[in-house]
Image 1: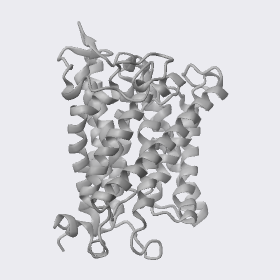
Image 2: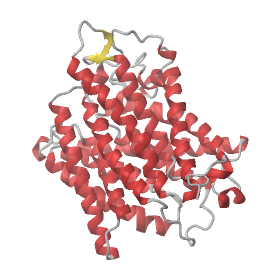
Image 3: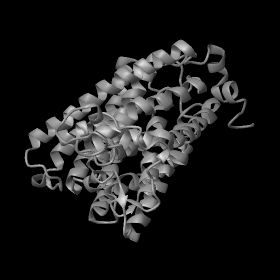
Length: 427
């Protein structure tokens, strides 16, 4: 996100607000929430079997409620608390914030971040915190108990999401901030983070009964394409909103988001067409999301040419990970959270270091592409290791207290009836 915004995250009292910036940030906040509800809920809901539709929607709604409350109680303080941070010094607060703003105790109505109210910033960041654990749902779809999902989501948000957000975005003294990592809107914080956690969850819970020999086609691709369209529209708030102003950075972020997404959709479609003889609706929807993911870390620093390259690369690479690599390794990442979000995030994070350079049409302060790529790769490696280890530990610890997975009978009946006593369709 914009450096200026995070350098002033411990907001000061404003004398004036910029009404245009405020209006854009209010709009962006609504757009990012729209990405989860109903966008992600429909995107995932259409891809599961009919007997599990409501379970996925229910998980997205419940996560939205739980993370909203947790964000206010302590999440914002842990992610953006700046006490004890000192640029170039590694200490505890390089990794996580503090509890000084619990229950938003320090939030004044007149407080500002950049030139809009801090209350808007709090809500904008809340929507990022909501969608990240909601993305993980797709990896363990159709087999995780609802109670276990809720406990895992809250604990994961607390010990994985908020520290990573702090390290990247909280300002000078944050670990990855001081490394000079470029992550404009959450390639590392949101997508690699969620994708790696999804892979770990899929492996720990095990495969769905019958996978991969039993066909498990999406039950309603109309829902999935509608959800993908909502994600595409909402992502302009995600990326262009991360400029923290209605300015030239937001405008360029909107343009490159559109360009990269289109390129990724066409690239996925083309590779699928060549390999399988026909392009599919599910394929182009997946390509759309891959492009949106990959441009996210780069949206504030790359130009249109770089966006085309990032989008095309993500479409091709994510296609192979979501198909050939998944089949070869045999893990049951039900809705391709790892193949699209982790891999797309990695592609985008690394290529940001290349195409942010002004020499290649970018707008970042990158004079040494090699050094920037090393910094980007370091952030990717750290996030993978941190998220994988803690996600595995959380799942194992939760499993000692409550069952993680539904039993075989519940899985056969479907989670809608087994866990919620409802049906998505009454035929």
